[in-house]
Image 1 (cartoon, rainbow, N blue to C red):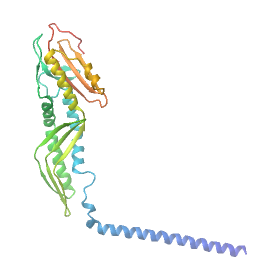
Image 2 (image 1 turned 120 degrees about the vertical axis):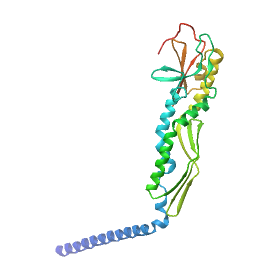
Image 3 (image 1 turned 60 degrees about the vertical axis):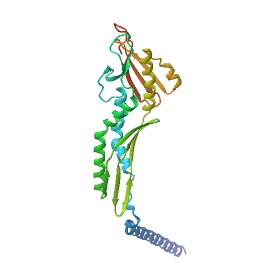
Image 4 (image 1 turned 60 degrees about the horizontal axis):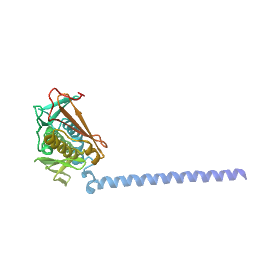
Length: 269
């Protein structure tokens, strides 16, 4: 009796295993069939022609982003100039005089009345070489992927916006592949930086320097809680101003020499 029961159980187990194997085979066949269908429909669906996540916009941002940010930082700590001419050397930085008088007792004269525009131009010119390099690489990148590339290069502009700086490329880009076409009328890159606000406050300080020979800084920190303003008085009468965004850490530095006392005063830092 037991022997017959054991044989029956074994037959059921074998049958169950065979059923499982059959099920696995069916599932495998279905997967292979689905893969084959996708493979043959692939060109018709246009999957191979869709631009990946590495779009022209993302490519240019990645290519230029770091150098763009570095140039903005360097120009900011040098008073809005990439290569300062009339400057004060302070803590390893050559800081441009934005208001200056070579004579003692005399009020300074504004050196860059259009500070926002001149700083923007400095940043724009500083990235020119990298712009050409990145767009050349962009063309080669898409050509290597089998795209027909048409790129018309015009000009590009720099815009100061709240909490960021943006570069807009007035370039016409067309990518063709497999009958599909992608067109881009403009591309942009940006960096998080409130330089525009810092330049506005700098202009206000410079107006006080030019009018009164000095500027009160605490009022700015009272009005702008995110702002830290430091005024470093030097022995030759120069004042180095350091404006820092407490939240983000980016800063703008500049120098002024107005109503300087003969013999010098202050502490060299």
